[in-house]
Length: 174
Image 1 (cartoon, rainbow, N blue to C red):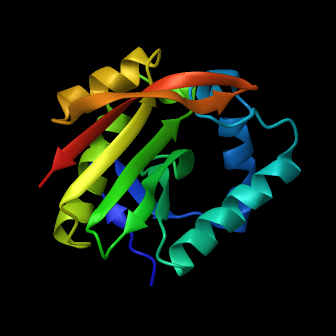
Image 2: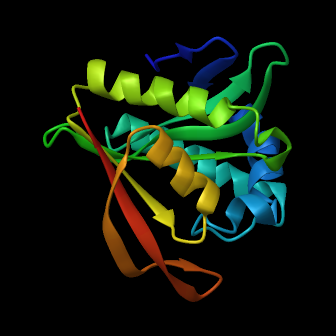
């Protein structure tokens, strides 16, 4: 059973086929994909493989991705979850994105905090990492604010539109 998480303003829930429009709305926005290592979507059909990937990753215990809904509006504003999940080694990498219409409202902080707590308490993780484009100043600041420690720089680690970018690597240890 897919875990549903709740915060004061948000519900984190399974992403399903009916979310294709919301996934497309988010990932077709250049401001979202600019620091994501993912090409900007150009048609809604491209959203369906995202949803299938999230489901398969969860089924195979390699990751878990939640849709982020605002409770009062019942609309998905982004996604969050663990990539490269290794229960054996008690670690995962966190990843997230919000549609720009919802930036600056504390939603990312709220969702990340809840997912971190779930990772440490329910999944038994001891390390949560994050990889962030160096130029993504807001995400770098957010992770630092939440207690993540910068461990270093990964040179030419992520490609965006055919160009290699350096990334910061962060960790949060239980």
